[in-house]
Length: 493
Image (tube, rainbow, N blue to C red; front, side, top):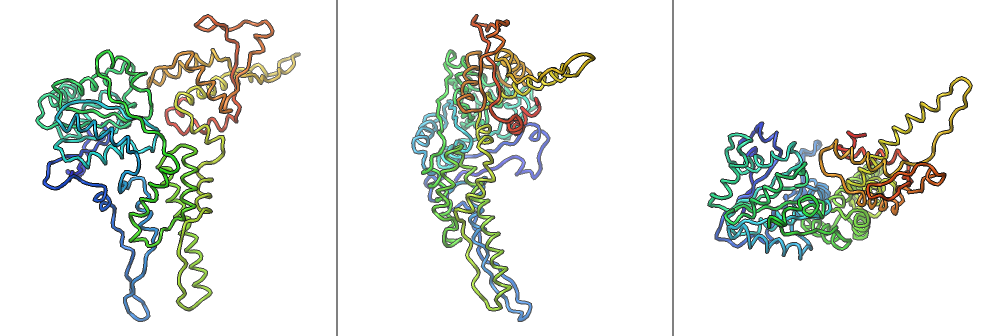
């Protein structure tokens, strides 16, 4: 059975190199005589929670056994960090990953795959579960690219995770290439949040994808990110270099999928917790609300766990009132999560419908709103200066118009250049972003009054006159709060 270890865990300390390069984990696969790990045996890896505790009666001195809350076991499996007892659903995705592993790393060959999908759709969990089930001999390295401050650090991060001594960061690429061509044991590199490695020319991503598909390479690469078109949009030369990875997309979870996954987690501890502590109707309400907003399984787990904490608090209050009223040993009320508990947690997490819309926008759409807020602030300052009354002059009326789309596109490009994270979209793609937000009721696009009065019209790069303006259809304060949730955009604001 594969063993999981990290360099920091073995030495009991965290090296300065690991702090600089970010966290990574290693899965080492060794051939064994027993059969590959099955879903049934994975279930036994869940933490065993004893539902009893002992204590001594101070009056009689007799030891008593006190039954602990059944929520202890259930809350442990409803945590994000707890591995699923089995992968429920995703049959087609599992089959695609299984075939990829069988034709590449399990046969000692190189290859590459790119897995895309929204957060919380089971991309990493599904891949790791299939790796654990494999009986082949290979090493698997999982590297989270988010902590890396520069794309070039990924080479040293991979070597550090595989316990390969790296003399310097400058030689990390050479050492990785030597290992890929000369290693007797094939290895699999998983780059989670691989879009964090995007730079000005994407040379790092091109090099690592080319290394994976080299005929003499024994390194297999799997990149994981949210964007569906990352390889087509940011790595267009992969096709010309014959390095196109296998593409696999994970769609958001549907209601039936979320219910089945949550129920499987509840069933895994049913023997310890007794009856299910979450009502079936409450479980379905949670699944429907999460599937309607994002399909993020992690959010469903958070809702269930917080609802259980609320139900447990209600149960303790009821038990305390019973103890005050009755001196006899009356049975304590059994806590159970109802629809009311789930509804309260959902209302607290989701907030207003406007906030939900803004949170659901992709990064490019938020960049457009960031450009609007930036220009709106500059315009407001200029109007404030003009509004200052002078001797013998009248106060100017404040402007209620929007921002010119051409100027907005220029500011958007300026923000992308300042962030140095990704290339700005084209004008036509920018207009598509604005149109999508207009359809959602977040912004409104109008014809400029100056254009209708015969004023100077702005001409786009394509030669077409563009005198439209954009204004917010929601409160600017809500937009600022939504943008502030993303640290990168918060720095711009």
